[in-house]
Image: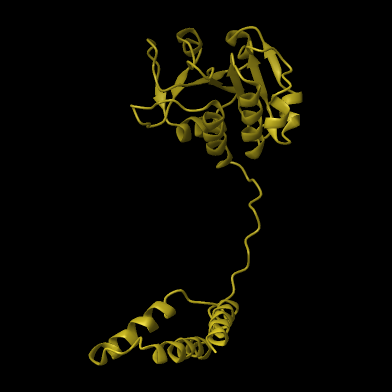
Amino acid sequence: MPPANNPPVFVLVRPQLGENIGKAARAMLNFGLCEMRLVAPRDGWPNPSAGPAAAGADMVLENAQVFASTAEAVADCAHVYATTVRKRGVTKPVVMPDQAVREVHAQQGRSAILFGPERSGLETDDVALARKIVTVPINPAFPSLNLAQAVILMAYEWSKGIDLAMPPEEELLPPAPQEELEGLIAHFNRLLEPRGYYRVTDRAEATHRNLRTVLTKPGWNHLEIRTLRGVLTCLEKFRH
């Protein structure tokens, strides 16, 4: 029986560079995916270049399985998706990544997502094994995605359907009381007036108002106001 959430198998077909395999492993583990399969990697397996590029995703690399053909790699999978920007002479339903992973979450049986080699992508025979093609809107003048980019795109879409721990949010301080904001505005005015900032008499009121608007918009908290007051005090001392 597949694990909870029915995670898909990511199949890298004839990958060329160990670095890209490592980066793909890193992308997978970032979003909670661990099962990688390799089809006839060009430089064999294991590849010493993969580990450093994986940046700690060693468990994905250590458990990666190697197959001689794409058909063997997906033999136990009931649902196979081929990632490509071209149909390559085969007629298949075409879906976006979000639709593909919704199906993976919902359907029974193992699912596999195929990723082609860096230089040319999946061959027609590889795509023919798939039930559906997964593609994204992309610049037709430059339709090439890096292998790890394609993997992270699919892995991220997958992660939306599971409960991954979010980074803790930093507690935001409330805006400072109006009294502190008025003190900041007065401090600015105290430095600006002797320098002739408001020298155009008929515009002085509007200039005061504009400065107040600029300083009021951000909703500074009391630490931010203290920092700005400190900056102004430093400049004031330097002037003397």
